[in-house]
Image (cartoon, rainbow, N blue to C red; front, side, top):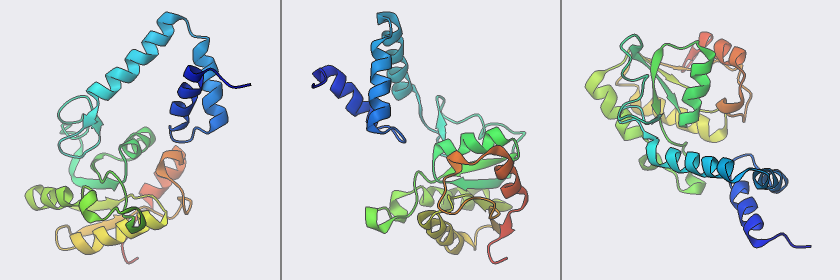
Length: 200
């Protein structure tokens, strides 16, 4: 038996979300079918609002509904300590650990020549300009411990070594091939406290 076209379309759209397979998407679609019209309208409105209101911070490129995110404008944060991550969701993961009091720079990806992602497709030029303008005491490279993340960290180290006195990498407590999004808070705390110099 075929699913009704509208249900099939909803399931297909949900399956495009990260980590959602066909079975989970279908289960979610059936869940939405049980919504009241008001609940369904609220969900649709929430999706519309997030797409309209959330954009990239004009300094770090993390997510914000303001021009500048709450971390970048917080003068209680150490503005001379910059943690470089791949994606905006990595910022939220690190913030939940409460181990870090500096600021961030989001690359919006990682180097991946096979996918056509080179330095010009990432927020590397803006990081260089930021360092040239404001300086920093330490740059923490917190890219994911994947092949692409390691390549990105190596590239950043070689490109920015003349602009910042100390470049460090998170400790190896992070699982190889993993993603910061799925790392628990204790592991993140240990990775930050055990961060090492690039050649250590």
